[in-house]
Image (tube, rainbow, N blue to C red):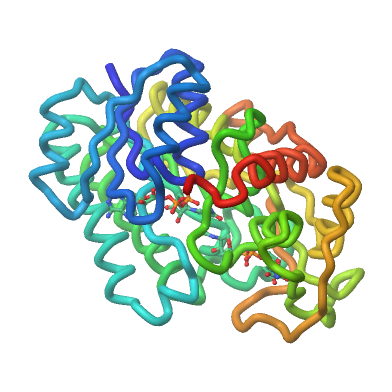
Amino acid sequence: MAILVTGGAGYIGSHTCIQLLKENYEVVVLDNLSNSSPKALQRIEEITGKTVMFYQADLLDRQAVERVFEENNITGVLHFAGLKAVGESVEKPLYYYHNNITGTLILCETMRSCGVKTLVFSSSATVYGTPERVPISEEAPTGAANPYGRTKLMIEEILRDLHQADSDWRIALLRYFNPIGADESGRIGEDPTGLPNNLMPFITQVAVGKRDKLMVFGDDYDTPDGTGIRDYIHVTDLAEGHLKALEKIAAETGVKTYNLGTGFGYSVLDIVHAFLEATGVQVPYEITDRRPGDIASCYADPSLAEKELGWRAKKTIRDMCCDAWRWQQHNPNGYQ
Ligand code: NAD
Ligand code: WQD
């Protein structure tokens, strides 16, 4: 009995593999390595002392996906594989729709034909678009502002339709807020290619001397210090949320939607200060224009996940900064 982790070599998938192995699940990873390194998988094995069955394969390659199911006794799937860069999705919408949506269709069709109907999907807080109010509960209106976000919304709808047509499906849609940090070993972490899009990898790259300064995208938002507020969640807490979701859907059929966030909002400057306090490293910054498409404030109401999954984020912003820094310091060039 094994869990298939699509995108298991990636940032969140690799951390979730560690939690699965620690809980004695058998783990099979399918990843095309388009945005990840096989070294992540080696290190997962070093950290846990357990092995991972790895298929370097593309979800768009139906035969390869079928082979993974034929060769393993898969009982459930954690589906992380997807493209995630918002800006790139605006420039290459067809690439995003094809990879994320067609990939999910092929996965679900294969699952159905093999009688595997347990699926945890990586959705995103981006499905809430510009929220009317914060904290954001799962009932808040949805409406994504870019092709990447729309792939998440469309896949959510596809999975609801799938359950509507066949009530044997057991599906969890997990809407992540802003995952940061790294495994406390410092051996695996977030490894963006090129210029990081996201705040924490940018901060750690400035701290390690790879970049001169952080550009803070706007200080004129309607927030206490004028910079954008987000709900940063430690990737290990997020990974644990997946195991809880898997247990929940093992116990009951249906489609469940959960926010995975801490419920606390921190501004960009709060993070810069927290990073200094946690690591002793001052990150120089400059205020620049707002980034198009950014919103002022976004943080979760995570109470449903606490009530129904018995899960809540435990790690502090200090833990997130310390662990992100340990990973970056020990691996200044990521997995290279
Ligand atoms: P990531 O890029 O590190 O991991 C995704 C993995 O999927 C990569 O290893 C990539 O090689 C693989 N992949 C992509 N397309 C594939 C395909 N067609 N076939 C096989 N493998 C493929 O990203 P991540 O940060 O770990 O995100 C994981 C999931 O969580 C994604 O679906 C992402 O959209 C979602 N998510 C991420 C964030 C975030 O801020 N990191 C927030 C919300 C949701
Ligand atoms: C956080 C804050 C920026 C970089 C994105 C995606 C979203 C989700 C998570 C997948 C904002 C500010 C950032 C920098 C800055 N991904 N910032 N300088 O924008 O909340 O969400 O990643 O689903 O879909 O849109 O995260 O880390 O990019 O930004 O000032 O160099 O940091 O303006 O206020 P975001 P982020």
